[in-house]
Image (cartoon, rainbow, N blue to C red):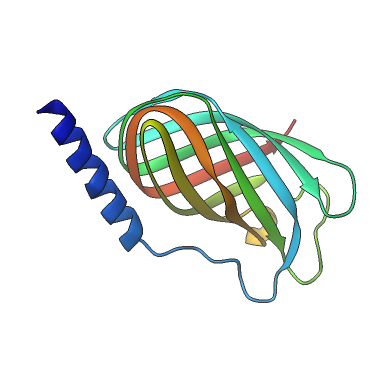
Length: 159
């Protein structure tokens, strides 16, 4: 009975997630590099969740930059998850990427579901002057039992 409820909840989260609009990279933006973040394990609550993360940005030209931050969700988020990894393609405006301009706040749409090993996707826009777009290029891998769908927020700071 419990497994059936969990399965129904995951199907519901997947349906909600697939109905939410994606946040595409803005037209005319240039790929600036790749941002890889390791997200701490945590517990999701029904309305809001927040987890710490450590990130490394590898620009297409230049030296890697290290960021710390938090990722949060406002919406459906129920369960416990282990450590996960999220990798985004980073896009910057036509003027190109300015070092350390990933620091700032990002917002977008998020959806994920996991039973044991799960997957999810996050697309976010923000950073310096709201000029950075983060497009997921690798879904997160996580261990745990969790389902989530809603508005995602990400805050990055220089480490």
